[in-house]
Structure formats: C-alpha cells, structure tokens
Image 1 (cartoon, one colour):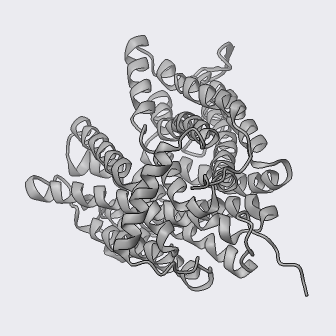
Image 2: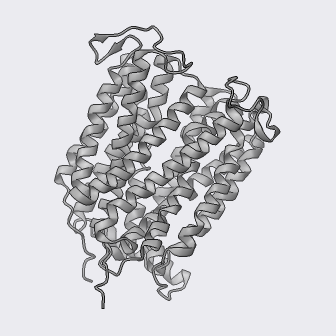
Image 3: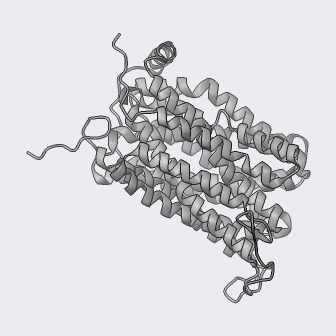
Length: 469
C-alpha cells in the first residue's frame, strides 16, 4: 500500500485535482479586486459618481474604515464558527454568490448619482468588500488540510499567479473592447466600443462589475466541485456559534501561548500595509510625476499583473525550496530597496543624483522618457517580490497555526491585513503635507515595511498547538 501524502496539517492531502482546483477560488476572486477596487470602478465611483474627487476619496476612505471595523468585530467569531462546523465550502459558495450578484448590480451605479442612489451604491460596495474578506478567510483556511507539505509554496503561489492572470485577461479585454476604441486609431482596435456601450455615460467603467461578477461565479466552480472539504462536525449552527464564541474568548485568554503567531501577525500588519500602500500610491505617484492618464495607468496595471503572476509562481517554487520564513524575509527586504529606487526617480532624474534626458525615446504614445521607462521597469521588479511576499506569508500562516483552528487564525490573518488599512494612507498624507513633497510621502512607506520586516526576525516557523484543556 502506498504511503499517504501528508498535508501541512498532518492529515492525508487532497489529490492534485483537489488542491489545484483550490487555486481556482483565487482565479475567480482576485479579478474583482483588480478591476473594481484598484484600477477602474473605485476611481470611477470617487471621481464620476460622486462628482467631486475630494469628497469621493473621503467616502472611499470611510467605506474602507467601516468595512475594517465590521470585520474586526465579526471575522474571528465567524472563523471559529466555521471551524466548529467543519465545512468551509458552503461559506465560500454563499459569499461568492452574494459578491457575484452584487458585482453585477454595479452596472446600475450611474454618473453624478445623488441622494438615495449614491448611498445605495456606497452600501453595495461596502457589503461586497465585507463578503470579499469573508470569502478570502474561508478559502485560505482550506490550504493546510488539502495541500501536501512539500508543495504548499507552489500551490499558494500558483493561486496568486492565476488571480493576476485573470485580472490581466479581463483588463486586456476591457481595454480592447471598451476603453481604447475612439481614444486610439490603431489598426487592430474596433472603431467603436463593443456591445454598443456609451463611453460618454461611462459604461466602459460600469461594465467591469458584471464582467468580474460573472467571472467569479464561473471560476469558483472547480473549487466547489473538486476540492475536498473538511467533514461536518455534526454541530448545528447554534451549537457551532456558541462553541465558536467560547473558543475565540479562550484563544484571547491564551495569547501568551500563541505569542509566536501574535508576533507574526503584528509584523505582517506593518509590512503588508506598507507594501499595499506602494501598490495603491505607485500609480498616484506616477500620475503626479509623469502626468500619466487613465490609459497609461491601465497599461501600467496590465504589465504589473503580468509581473505579479510570474513572481507568484517563481516565489512559490522558492518557498518550497528555502522555506516560507526565509522567502518572506528576503522578499520584504527587497521591497524596501526597490521602493527607495522608485522614489529616486523624477522626470529628469534617476537614483537621486543622475540627470537624464526628458526627450522621447520612442514613438509609442505612452511611457516616452527614460525616467518613465525606468520607473515602469522598476515597478515590475517590485511586483515580483510583493506577490512572492503575499504568497509566502499565507503559506507561513498555514504552517504555524493549529490546524483545528485554521479558519479562526486565518480570520485574524485577514484582519491583520485590513484593520490598519488606514495607516499607510495616513502616513503618506501626513508626510506629503509635512514635507510638501509627493516623493517624501511615497518614501515614508519604507518605515512600515522595514519595521515589519525587522519583526520577522523574532518569528519562528514552528507550529503552535492548541493548549490542552
């Protein structure tokens, strides 16, 4: 009889079909975040739906703060309840169906909304954001029990890679079919936007909601069909809720026992916030420094997704070879150096001291100067290490948390990435205002990444066990 292949949790791992199908959950989920939150719909909501970019950005800030507060109050308890019930796939199915249908409804959020329409749109985006975080927790919590211990880095990295591939594919489609027609006369473009979309009504922005929603519903199916779930515990929902709440309270009272996990989550809270800040403000810095327009930023996002896709796959391979903690330390250190390289670039300057020409280097209408090309290329290297760090940090969490509390701890893991989401924007805003410099504001993110990275040196990769009661 063949020796069973053990998972990270020490149980029998799923078949390759099972654990590779698990990656389809991220393939389905991440394009929503890429299209709606980062590059297209949130900027559209802030500037066009609200009609006032300053007030719109304020509303987006309140939206993220409200989601973070609600998640802080609920996600550890919901994770513990799921642990007690055993199964995670019903929770994934419920949140994905809600997100998919909600994303389709984004089509009806029209420009210059006012009154109830504006606040209904705000509420819909808020609820989808909360459901997205829940879905991510339940999806991540499946990793320890299904993945072979020697392939965890590969599987986690492949999931991030596929998520970026999905986002890349949909951004290419949106650019080709809806955004570029009429803006450029390149021979391969349609003369007008597909499906009769009216660009003056910003339908090219609104369509990304239904596209991301349908994509999410379709590509989550392989996970729901082929990935094995943890067996049901036999507890009713009320019994699981009562036991789960007690379990969270017990975990809080046993924080000393989980000191290594606590140090890790605190470190991740800082370096993750800083690295996500670079992702968010990288385009803002480029737009302010080089006057990049919407199409430039979309192309920038497309190429960054390709780099992230490559980085996630290669990073997963390195993770399995060197270990999650070593891979994470190297990745965080490199993001610090690369951020310094990014802020050293101005329209006529590279590396703080080297002056370069501002004349166009090619006839392509985007990224025309030496400084722009170098900034563009340096950001691609940042994306490689950024996604490697994301993948390795998830794998490390799967390795150090008690398997029987996986959803609860992945709830705290997700919370550590969102509860201080205000920190990076606040640091950038205050530094920019204090020094009256966009460069100084962007560079301030080094502090968060460096402090979080330094804290990794007091973290070990030993698995914590649940205390004996």
